[in-house]
Length: 66
Image 1 (cartoon, rainbow, N blue to C red):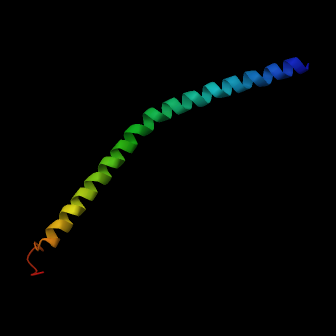
Image 2: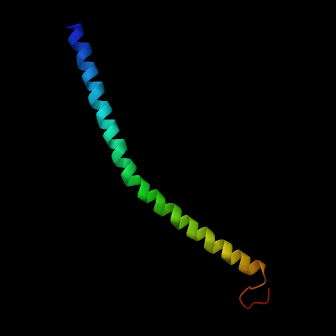
């Protein structure tokens, strides 16, 4: 009985490991494009804000005299 119980636990561990590996592999493919898009959006916002800052710092305030 003990040998069968140990074998059963080992089988559950192997199946659970396979499921975890499959979930990780699938999530990597789903998450990667979303993270890339989010980083691209953040990069665009940072670039726009730094361009605005440089424009205002150089004296090009848009007509209000400052």
